[in-house]
Image (cartoon, rainbow, N blue to C red; front, top):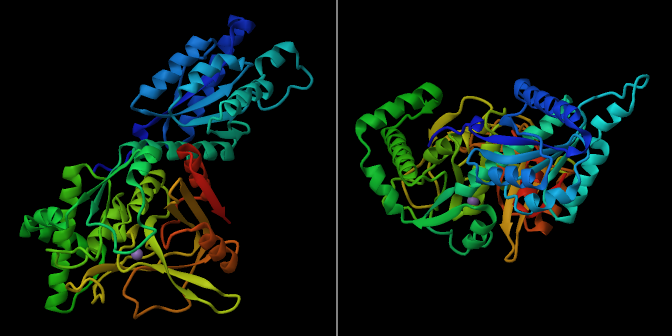
Length: 475
Ligand code: MN
């Protein structure tokens, strides 16, 4: 899989106006819009390329540019701004057919009113205050999902909001083509990891298809010793490898083979997300732990126990988070500390936590696993740094999808955890443990989540808006 490159995506900047004001004003409108776009691209604060488009002044021009946005492979979203008044009936035909995410930027070229010199020329040129209201009305009238960002275009907060939306728009584009390999089926009898794959494809674009574990085993069995030894060298370079017995060494060797085999299987099929299940491991030496951890760190979405919804959400959040500090991982609310007033959650999984959230150099260890009936699996063990984070869960309620997002505060464990041989993180849900957990459960949130220290809740608000799904924020 190629590394995710956000610069391959564009968002188009479209300025609305009309012919009423004459050529001079329109010239100035174009100059100002280009200045804003240049500033966005030079500030380095917006991850995607912002592309200036000619000022639109007629229904035909509006329809043309929005249709071009629909069919452009690079364009993942459209930013609109009404520098002057742009009568919004002109926008109806274009907006009605717009298929790309929309951000309405409500700003003004001039920051300050020139109080002592203001005249009607200034008033005619700087009309966003009412022009954008006319545009907002028609968006609401058309029931168009969009993000409205308000403020002076040089403000850091304004650019950050545009940046977040742009990243989400890129993730949305990625989701339209995402292929998810469901290796094995669901963990038997589990409810929340099930769902309607056809509904999901209609809603999110991605496709989920099943494969037998043997399809992957074929790849693993054809891996050469040479390939494995090269990878083992990499493990030695970047992890503290703890293998004191021949069996442990053998487990790490087999885990490396799995990683190479899984990677080849995923690349050949064009998959960017996958699931496994410990109830279907025929032909595998061990439950894939290390391989999954490392594939996640490279940007693959993953869900354990057949959980394809979480795999998809993880991949989507990986795209949003490219290049940001903090990681994104598969996670599970595992066990509680219920000391009154100091309640917290220990999050982990049997093995599959992404090393992108590791606070220190992980140790590579081999331990027995009571589940799955296979050889002792290799896994990376590490802690996660304290700080703000969130958990996100996508559930299928039969007639619609719901995204539940709980902001949490990650904290240090009360002691070192020498006997806990898995990657783990400890957090306190917001607004507090009782309310956070209660709302989560009342909302039907899953035990599997995507945990991230790279993304704020605003990313997921934007995602829910674009995907047109229900959002339950818990904060
Ligand atoms: Mn699980």
